[in-house]
Length: 354
Ligand SMILES: Nc1ncnc2c1ncn2[C@@H]1O[C@H](COP(=O)(O)O)[C@@H](OP(=O)(O)O)[C@H]1O
Ligand SMILES: [Mg+2]
Image (cartoon, rainbow, N blue to C red):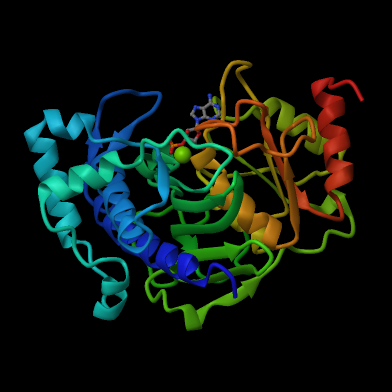
């Protein structure tokens, strides 16, 4: 298998960071650092990014990382720095040989800040670059809904390895999907999934709490013989994806079931394992540029599970031009057999010239 070590390191790194995020999620304040309402951040985002970058740098010192966060705030604020350091020290895998594969604990506060700051790559078309979203769906995280820890390796601008930790999704790949799925505060038995995929090698899921590679099960998208029966997923946040356009598209496709609203790349993961079918993310603002860390891991997962992903014009997503998908608008993901039908209707609704 190609990229075997990369997949293993990514799975273990995301598993360990997910343990960290779960302790923050279950705390009353959810670690909120109220900097901005439009893009909130928590101590969990900083801790998870530091842990994951430390893991990558241990295993692949030459690789670059595009991470959502940096250490500027923590360097200025001693109280926040201490909170994050306590979190980072407490998050450990059960298995010490697995810990060793990702470099063991971070040794000092300085090492933590250095790791956190190593996510400043500008991305690009050449070489090995990881895209990292330590807590994707932060608004869902704060609301007590879905969120995801997302990591992808891009090789020469192409997402090649993708790993997503979803602490609040049911382990059961077949669990029926609705907008309230797993969105309860309790850390119930049966929750928490770790997804992985390598280009050309397929996609898998396994319980997040016992992330041993041996426990992985192959996942694939569901066949959709009649698009009218499809289940489509969209953001909870109306500011992230146009609920109106999404509804118009669903209605033109003859879909009568209401959408499943879910935060984060848990949407990509859910359609990849056939719990849902279609993911629509239609732009609200003309000027917004989607971030590569919000999509890279999910795209590998869906492609490897038998799906196709493009932007709303049907153009491939271009991950090789920097930290954003600036040549694309919106995202449409669906199983290969119904994709042509879906994208035609998307273009029609958005008035894209054929
Ligand atoms: N105006 C906008 N349009 C689309 N996406 C946006 C947006 N503003 C923020 N986002 C992104 O939407 C992501 C969440 O997506 P979703 O709605 O699918 O949960 C956020 O990730 P973070 O939560 O990591 O900041 C953020 O990067
Ligand atoms: Mg995100």
